[in-house]
Length: 428
Ligand code: UD1
Ligand code: MG
Image (cartoon, protein in one colour):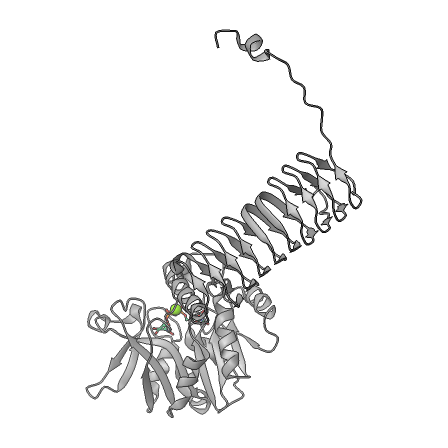
């Protein structure tokens, strides 16, 4: 069955106490609104996103991901509130699924569930111990929904109700057309509430949904709870596919990360957006950002920054790598390798630094096969080291080195005997 979807994202989000619009706050690396649009697109080819506050910013961010959604600007001045939000939506299909933009955990299958019922309005509710902030679902003696009362408008008695409105509704488009204009702003917030449509309907079906999946994020505290739940979901899926995670509650994996083959993630690992692992062992407290790691071990305490490709390599502790391609390389300790290409059989000694930046421009370091880079070497880019080269410990490399050579630039070591006693005196 074809349905249209409207996602409400025009609210101020005052309770977030931020200059960033609420729906642009991120969960597992992506904006809350991104998560919900992505899922909505799985159930509909007619997705409307309602915006008003910082509309241009929201539009710009979402246009990076999606090119076939309709943005609708709410007439917020005249019709503030969630009821006002859907007034400007013109759905293509006979049914309109309305979602709050602050529900990042909702999935396509949850949305699909609403279509299994036939009513003027299918609404959703859950029962929770801490209903504060949610609209309360008021039922009659036969358990039929009468109305939804918002927290701020509720009487003390109504506040006791623990069955709350989850904030997702499936409307018959014809019902909306007939009743939207009947909404008023006669309430404490002087807003037009979508929830008032419930008491205008004769035929309401209420479905019970999961409190966690349908949670609305209204504050930074809620954001942290949603993050924990999303992480649990992401990591569980990987573990079920065979990924080993040591102390998974300490591991952070963003939403688009790909993991294949036999992988081990030790405690404290962070895998950020755009990362792909294939047969990789990532050791304690390493961070990998937008990089591809294949048949390699990384860390502990290594930092792999964006656009790196590391294959058949071993990267040890306190090594930072940025925008570099390493194939068959060992860099065991304490190095910075930036804007570099390093080939098979090469060993990068402890304390090696690519000096890739002269204050204005970034330059490349290219290192060939079987190169032995001694400890504490500085490679001043742009520079090219050919195959089969030895660079002596402590060398500053400022020019290209031809195949098969030794590079060494050391001041001779001078030894002044008994200098210690002359300087400090003989008692010392
Ligand atoms: C809303 C419901 C409440 C429900 C809860 C579930 C109303 C009046 N109340 O309350 O019954 O229990 O969700 O999470 O609907 N928005 C607009 N335009 C506006 C105002 C809001 O598009 O003028 C958008 C917001 O950006 C947000 C969504 O609508 O994404 C919900 O708004 P929010 O202020 O979070 O409503 P709640 O108080 O959570
Ligand atoms: Mg909300």
